[in-house]
Image (cartoon, rainbow, N blue to C red):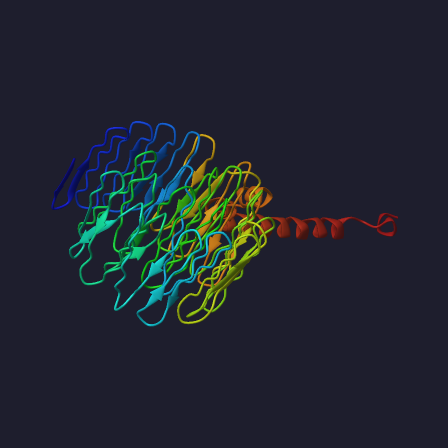
Length: 484
């Protein structure tokens, strides 16, 4: 049951109850097994879930996230998006008009030349043709048809039947076993999979996605996208900067779009905070930390170390178990991996990704950002647009600033300071040092007032006078000779 009225949408589902109300950037989602409550109002969102508790609050300058078991942190600010899945790997590709993916077991080859793209895969044949922002995707088992008008899309499915139609800028993708329908309209994209029914409604700046076994709610605003897949396969292609990474067993999808990145895995906890130029990702067994600021991000993880660095012309990713090396440049990106060969070509220059098994190291930036953590607690501070994230098992505190981010954690102390060209992360000892530092008020309180200074000056004069008096007294004393 879907009702759209200017800026409102209500969706209800049998197995996973969805209630979405969108009004002036406001959305509320509720679900039975995965209760999601999303409220977007002037950059405000609240997400709550039963088994996967999401609480996201975005206000002009605040954001609070709380989670119970599988905490997902999403902070949406200005033009942000959330992707969520339990057993599903999310792959998001954002790029001007580019994406090339090659994989051993799931071979994807995407070639984009000005306005064309072709994707071929062994087990999952993807054929993408982009012409003047137009792509068509057909599939055997999963037919997706989406209709977008200006900024509006409705998806209908019997079991997974999605019909997508886009105006102005269209994109369609065909696949054998897993039909992925990608629609690019202005700045929009949707991908659906076999076991997951995705329903996307885009109206002005709205998007809702529903799935049978795993309910996904995505709210798209201006430049956002969602991807979903069978077991781990997610394909997403967005305009204005693309990158897609796929893998066999633990497929990691990285989304880089202007100042955006998302990484997600099977049993991995993902925390994504996107605000102005920031993104944070965390995971339980596979800790992902992503911080994007002024083209900056460094990701380190416990079992699967991710290091992300995005620069104007280069990005290199290295990892232990799944070594991915990504180089993002103005036009090209190539990804190579041992078990799953990924070849990514991104717009205007180059990008190379190599992976041994599954380790990702991605570097983003004109400057630098380093995140180090012990286990999971992240506290991110951003200014002008403050966001505070708190979680039961993973406390996140996020404060968004124009170019400043500070992350503090109990067991995983992260301190990130993002400036136009600097990013600094300190540890617990640094936090204690900062705590020990005198505040301006304390320093001022230690300074002498003018009256106190004058009083001390008078005291010094009195001391000098007394010294002179002692000298005179000494001079008045008779010598022994004078006494005789």
